[in-house]
Image 1 (tube, rainbow, N blue to C red):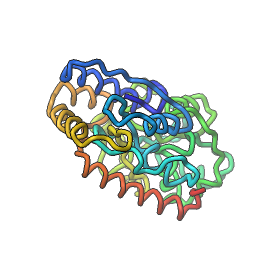
Image 2: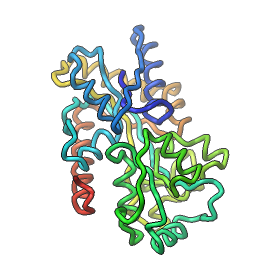
Image 3: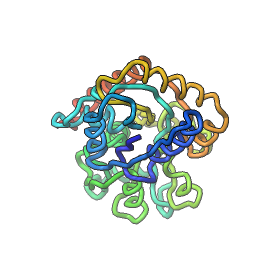
Length: 292
């Protein structure tokens, strides 16, 4: 199972939980291999070149699957090139600052950014990742243009969070599922989460909409995809197995422990969700001048 991102991100965590449970059910070894590079592009291209025999699959995620194709016209794959098989989990994004920041609310921080946008920096991954369009929409709802801020490119979500902690950037928006320990320790402070409801893991953190900024609404996800030409029988096996895991307290408990939720979708529904998400991202990237 290819993970097109570095270790210690939410996709990597989810892949390793999924692999352990697949091994138990299928009685075959499932190797998780991180093929990081270019915001998920390197791993995606390796998957697309694999034989469609079910032996090489990939756990993909929001940024690499739909957001990057919407932003980058030169990307060497399209959103629908990997074959959607089954969605596994979902995770809200959290808008965070370092624990020692004087800002205690989203409104307070955005007011500071609006007053002097050029003084503030954000981190992105490769083409942008899941957070870039989410941040752009959030900033837009606060009267701020993303293009007015400084941007630094990092290798994966963990590096983006490290930059927010050590002050190289001023804030970040990443999956809740990859920052639990950092929030618990106070190393990072969450000012808002994405989506239309608070997360079970952090019920005291308001949604951005509750704070008056409705643009921060993207929910991240992970899902299994395969190479072109994948046999329908292989797809059906994956769909049925992950559907069963979605009812297994041992599996769901591990997913929820990291701050995510199980969000099973079969192949057709998963593809429809991807297409809708891509179209929204494409419209947003075009309207905000982020498509290149």
